[in-house]
Amino acid sequence: MIRKTVLALTVAAFIALFYTYSKRPQAVKVKAYTVAAGKVSATVANTRVGTVKACRRAYLAPATGGQVARLHVREGDKVRQNQLLLEVWNEDLQAQVALQKAQIKANRATAEQACLRAGGAEREASRLSRLQQHNQYASEDQVDKAVTEAKAQRAFCHASEASVLVSTASLAVAEAAVQRTLLKAPFDGTVAEINAELGEFITPSPPGIPTLPAIDLLDLSCLYVAAPIDEVDAAHIKTGMTACVTLDAFAGKRCSGKVSRIAPYVLEKEKQARTVEVEVKLSEASDLAELLPGYSADIEVLLAKKDRALRLPAEAIMENNRVLLIGPDNVLALRTFKPGLGNWNFTEVLSGLKAGDRVVLSSGREGVVPGARVEVEHD
Image (cartoon, rainbow, N blue to C red; front, side, top):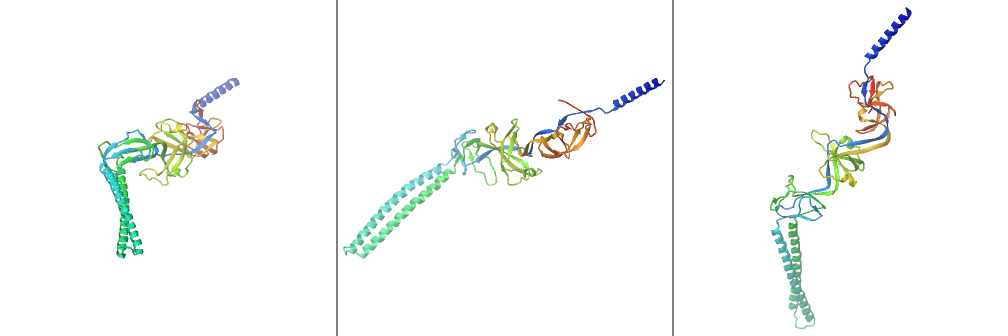
């Protein structure tokens, strides 16, 4: 009888245990990350897309409007500094130059003649003065007239020489007028765009009214990326800091960049955050390869870094610097940690966690809450 009672109790206990086990909540499958040391950096990225730009770009138009008479380049041509690109019709001005050159020749001949006469008059006055001193056939009146004539001739000589200077200056004015009709390259570069045709009339842009440039010239030997940085983040950036550039057109990062300029003012855009424009120059030829002005680009400025520090991936971190810690019994516990350096990928752990701790990566899954029992998925 006792044996049957013990057997019945054992069976009842087993049934109760089985029932309790079967009703226990199933473990939630999660991905885990083991806290370990690695590289951690603090970076700042642009808030809106940046742009690849040429260090020098000139929207060129002749200083004087008129009809395009000659076009010396085509789109894509490489040009040298001071190379002639375009000419506006200027035959009337060229004629003025020729006229002024002829006038200079005439004035020089007149000045030479006047100065020769002045020399002769001065010699005549000197001869009469010597004769008068020796009381020989020269009256005081004759000497006075000769001296006056010599001075007048010398003054006319000076006036004639001055007229040569005036005509030379007039030639410079005429030549400057011709130069205003010539469009020359201000630097070595590549012709990106031409908005003029032979025979077409072009005019300079009126003040405050931008128009298409006759020629768009780029210096492709030097490129940089300009990108807007939020005003809060911009305060931490200094020139010379290392920066990486990523482009939509190419895969990978180009990390030979340095911050070359930080705008001394804040851009205020309607319905947008206030930003500061930051410029980054790439130095390595491999990073500059295939870049073209106008490409969209993003920058990531390195503020500080540590080669070995405890770190957490961004996807493991919840609001207020909290994580779900996986305990020895695979039960989740909420844990708060103190962060250090951080970016979009990793955040440094200063305290609250230790190396070897496991935290949940998939915290957004249903049922992944403090107190839940979990099963770690293995890749």
